[in-house]
Length: 149
Image 1 (cartoon, rainbow, N blue to C red):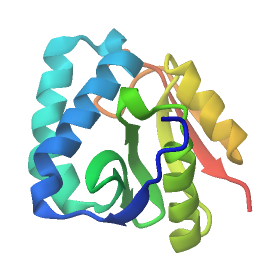
Image 2: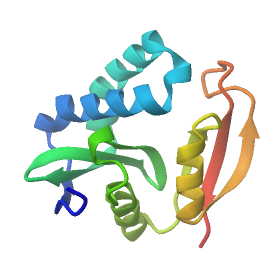
Image 3: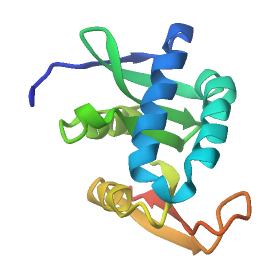
């Protein structure tokens, strides 16, 4: 399974439910500190707003979505891979696809999500600023990052 072939394609409306499921399952692992109630609220926003309105690219194995990246201009709104497919190069491929489209990128990562922070550092991002609260003013520290070019 390590070398499952995957392809990257544009988001389709039929992807909404599978991608929000991927988002939720990956978020429960990476962002457990936010709590299930908050993650459920965010999932509704992901489904209603973020997936359809962002420039979303989907990684598929045998036409089944296994990960995605959502872009807003050169900002990475989200990069999520199904837990069953993490560590197989899908996140790196989605990020490389975004670099190919946009050049330099920026993003925000929760400081507590150390694995994501390391992943982005490994792929050429550096810290721009740190904040003790998230974009909604809640006590979840965030790190703003930008790719080096």
